[in-house]
Image (tube, rainbow, N blue to C red; front, side, top):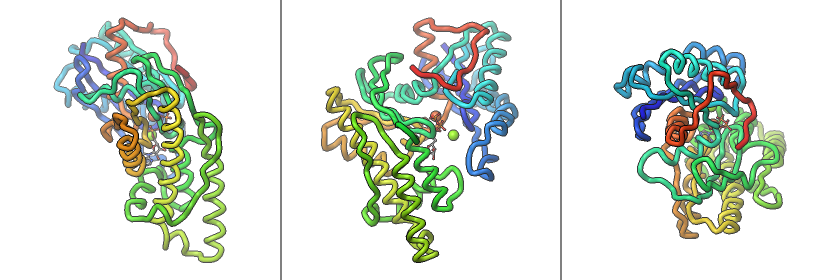
Length: 332
Ligand code: ATP
Ligand code: MG
Ligand code: FE
């Protein structure tokens, strides 16, 4: 089947086309309007989705060299995400399916982040463990089958991406800060500053204490030297990045050992982080894991992951009706 997929859960408007599970195109329109506000403004995001969705789909069809008539089904992100943003994608998908008289497929955005590993040839085998780290979520997922996943650990407060973004805000960097922390960290020494590792039982995470300790650390050092941040930006970013990576990896190790899993994967926007990618590779070599990291364009929000999830649902004949509604919160 040829599947058109739509992703609009947050601030990326994305459309992708896949044929029999092979990705033909993946167009991502990033919204820059939020930079001025230091975070995503939901109402503005909805409007920009409304503006970009048809051009994104047209571009995805043209890059894939298929016409509207070639599409066999439409997959869309049902949730979780911003309701107004989701509504734009869901409504577009419904209208397209209605006009072409083809089936509709709903996709859970967090499952899709995990299923991004099935794009391309290097696929993990079931059961595998996936650390999904994004702007809104931090989850250790035990993946037993395409749609049989169990969250065995998650954050009790902030997400890992949120910790990145809040740290960058404290450092006076623009939004979104994750990629900038990564950039500065590359020229820094990660062992200069030591930030605390929270002691949380089981496979769960907490990042709010780290954020507070960074806030006090910067406040105290800036009081002594007003240029402290500017002079030490690279070392601060490298040290923060390393701490976030070790917090994540230590829990992942614990979970993989407990469940006796050797196939270990990374997913979500923060898996674009160089320090985390390297840490997973190193740990994988030490523990003889098979490690899986998605290509950069499939880490942050994209419709290709919705398309591949839609493809596996199509094979199972799992379609939804025109009365389907988006869900801001959606578990699996
Ligand atoms: P969710 O998937 O939980 O709904 P989201 O869709 O907003 O949230 P993603 O697009 O998957 O999240 O990821 C965005 C997050 O990834 C942001 O917090 C961003 O700062 C972070 N991020 C992106 N690139 C990097 C990087 N290179 N290093 C660190 N963090 C990064
Ligand atoms: Mg985003
Ligand atoms: Fe996401």
